[in-house]
Image 1 (cartoon, rainbow, N blue to C red):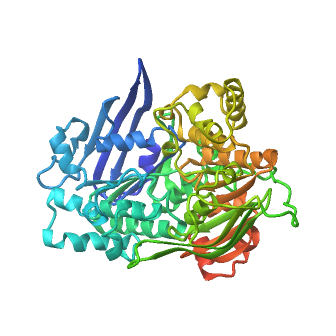
Image 2 (cartoon, rainbow, N blue to C red; image 1 turned 60 degrees about the vertical axis):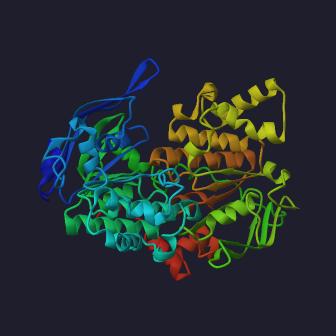
Image 3 (cartoon, helix red, strand yellow; image 1 turned 90 degrees about the horizontal axis):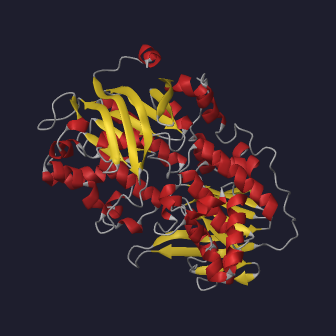
Length: 548
């Protein structure tokens, strides 16, 4: 760490010091090392990014600081925090050694946490306003008469302009991006000394991501709040943090000033991370499927489909009348902000929701939620592989579930198909015997693709299928999808807020806003000569890794 200490600016007092941290997890009769001797410091007003591949130890470090590792973990080393307020630990006390009661006084008040998964982090039985005000009530911060106003202001500062309406809703009534912003508001509301953010913007589009990161930077500048950012988005780390640390297999392999480290890396591992960014690696440059035949009948045809959610008093027009044609071999990207209607359109195509008006045809047949035939033609790949599988079943059982439901085969045929599918997505067939918690995120997403291929579909609908993955795994999955598209003559409908991924993978793009398509065309033309102001705003908001 000598190089890091010699190049970082002196921004203030030392707020957090992680010293020789070692974390191992007990798994059956063996111990697996997740963090091996990591040390670093964060000063007041400073932002530090932890980057690295999945399994490099980033989240384990964050959970150690927060005291959330659980009973299976064995921890050694020290985590000193000097930012505790009145009534909590003294300056510089070791968080790992604190009694639980004292540690709870710090978490949520002096140290706030923004988790990655909004779906599993909000209480489904409590309204949004109650969850955002919880840190204020629990720690008795300020005047209770002002709690609601403070919560609404925090929601607005995350980009939720209709905070008064959203505050009274339940989590299931919000989009994924809206739920993520609620979590961020919950962290902001107590004005903590340290914010630990674990992939806080991976579920957000680029414009909202910019708003959130702007807000985090204002906090560090105005209040001396420090930020520990865990991210696989190297451009965000380079643009938005002071210091970056690259981790591999639980050890620090590179560290330094973020912009320098990530734009001109010296270490081979850091260079490999940078080269895996979409558009840089060239991994897809030689994998280009043939152009679809223009006069071939559409495989997916959407005509005037529209959808409204909510009650009569507060209807939400999620999707305005839209037309879309997808031919065999097409690769169409759908981009737009959270709440723009992307996922609603995907659900209608998949037959998971019926349009209020308009029609959807798959393979020439009308689609409805009761139609089983269309599900043999179009299959989904969802964003979060961890929540896509039954945790009590082996992944091999889950991969073959569509076949058992829609195209039953003998046991020997199922075994043969399982081996073929796992091999096809680049996995050892022996992994079929494992349960979801025994695989990495990248392995699970490959398994999800294998399940989608089990019925030999003609099209895949990928809804944010790589947004939760680190850059190296993301690059591998994109190359895998491109290869499978050629080998299986697949059409791809790829929904993403990551415009870099969309530009790498898709021939054509639809840009959606507030339920309607505002721009559509060939991907290169839309990116290079966009006609709509909103499209230009999206492109301008993309974080850059260019040297300055």
